[in-house]
Length: 221
Image 1 (cartoon, rainbow, N blue to C red):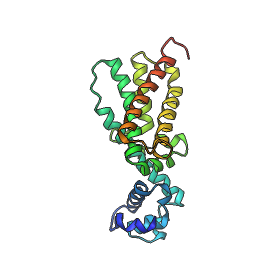
Image 2 (image 1 turned 90 degrees about the horizontal axis):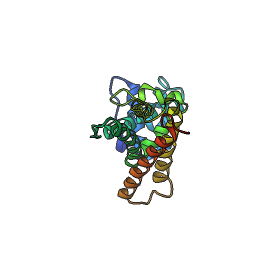
Image 3 (image 1 turned 45 degrees about the horizontal axis):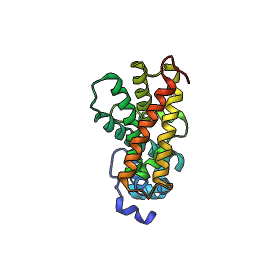
Image 4 (image 1 turned 30 degrees about the vertical axis):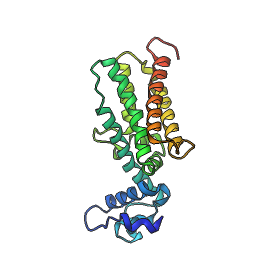
C-alpha cells in the first residue's frame, strides 16, 4: 500500500498542516481503505516528516478519526445531491421521497467510494461523532442528521409518531448499512452495478414502507 503513496501525494507547502494531513489521509483511504491511513504514509503524501503529524494528532487513531470525519462530509454531500434531485410537490410523498433519498445516497457513496465509506465508518466511534460538524455536508448537516431531518419530515406530515423517530433512525441506518457492507465487502460485491443500484432503490422503498407501517401516528409498533 505504501508504495502507491507517491502517486497521490499532495505536498504540503504552507498553510494548514492539519487539513493537508487529513486530505492526504482521505486520498489514501479512498483508494486503499482504512488500513492505508498510517502516520508514515500520510506524512509522506503530504511531504512532511512523521514527527510533524504529532503537532496535530496524538496517534494514528486520532488521525483516522479526523479522516473519517472528512469522509463523512463526502457521504453527507452525496445524500444531499440525491435529496436535491427529489421532484415531488405533494408534502406527504415528498417527505417519503426525501427519506428514500437518504438511503439511496448512503449506498451510492458506499458503492462509488468503498474506501472512503470504510473510513467514514471509522470516524463514528460514538453517536457524538454522528453530529460532528466536521462531517457535515453543504447544508451543515451530517449524514445522520440528514436522516433524522427526513424522519422529522414524516412527523411533520403526520406519517410518523414523534416517539418512533429514534427507533426508525436505527431501523433505516441498520438496513442500508447492512446492504452497503454486503455490496462492498460481502457476497454481493460481484453483482453488476445496475443490479446493486436497483436493489438499493427497492430496499429503500421497502424500509420507508416498514417505517410508515410500524410508526404511524395512532398506529401500532
